Image (tube, rainbow, N blue to C red):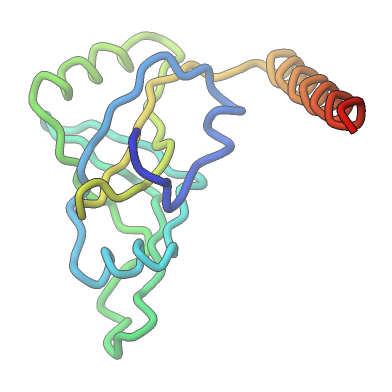
Length: 152
């Protein structure tokens, strides 16, 4: 990923071991692109579904654009088609067909003016893995704090 993310799914990396990532374009209307540009995208509870050799992001919330009158026409959580090559969709299907694997969106960002979605294939973490992640994060934070105070 080369650009600054507009929205990230922080829970995805906490709840899943991410093994592989893909970059996909998203089919959006003009007002949806403007909303994403304003930072009104939310990836919590979103996931990627494959059907008929096509990929869709389900549950991604894009709030209506603030400067538009006809906001009733747009459903903020509608499924949106992802633009991937056929080989990438095949690889995704093969990876998530294994037991316990799923595909989740990680972040939304702009790349050369186009909205891109970083998606990851991951396996769900067990409760003890999540506790281990929290311990590691807390340890790293304490080490960073100690080094900061020591250097003063």
